[in-house]
Length: 116
Image (tube, rainbow, N blue to C red; front, side, top):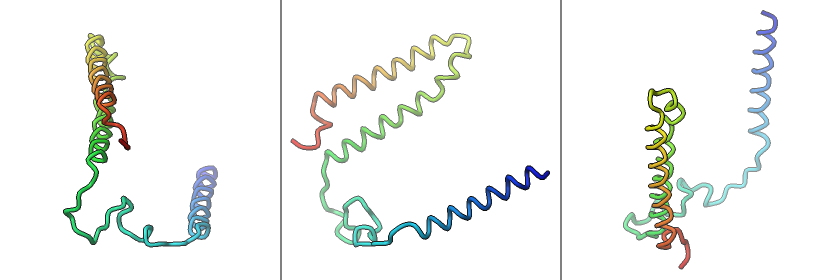
């Protein structure tokens, strides 16, 4: 019981000390960009019909696509416990090959270039 009490006391003291340090340590120099609700460069009070870069949209969609790839490959470690794990690894390889071909195509078309 003494070990549990000591561990809890150390955890509470360390948490309180780190919380106090985090309030005292940072230098507060707010400017207009830090006080703005959005740090993406758009003016939240301006018109919503302003055009934005299509390249920004394309790169954001590509990021979401390749981020979704991770969700598709999450069951892969459990695939070797199936009766036929070869099918699981075949489909995972097919997904990776398809995404790699898509990336190579976008790269060849210049879709990942920021400046022209």
